[in-house]
Image (cartoon, rainbow, N blue to C red; front, top):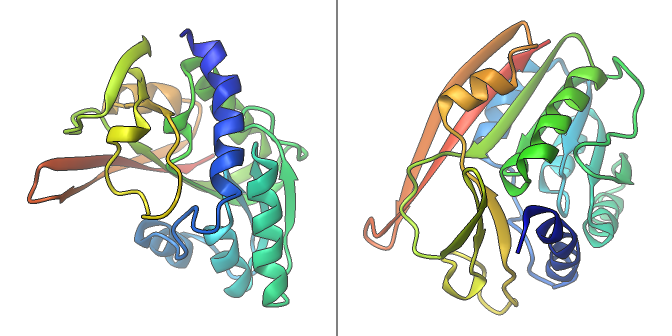
Length: 229
């Protein structure tokens, strides 16, 4: 299967996944919470790029930020809206791809995107970085969290393009019990690639996050890229 065919199948797969009752983590990640509290002024307009079912949008809205979210899954967007509505929280949410952000130039004070660009093909990643630069205001900040090269995994099936793999859901570790698993694309980044991708930004800080599970049988590695336009 080539990369472009995989993209179409992934859209349907994420819709199917997000339609399930227990489809995503419920609480914001530590890295996003830390970024928001240290880099974003209260009330800032923040984009949740690839919001999934809304865990970070929910957090941002609760903390008083003007949150907008995009995701290419209609099911994910609908769940995000309902999550905020249950607590009378506000947000603006649209179905769109990460490489076609439906907002004006220089619109956002900040952006968070966690474990999203690493689920894309190389062409989509390149275009999404240009789109992110376009919609951020001057001095706007972003946190981009992606998978890093060097993970220890047993569910990789085949490489569909450079550093981009189709992974086998049946051998995937760490998914919630009781939900149907789906195959997915994973692109593994290295530091040189991150520096090259975000070269148009005025500032770039790179940090690493690593965690293990099953007695260190598996290792997840992430790159945390903190950007300023």
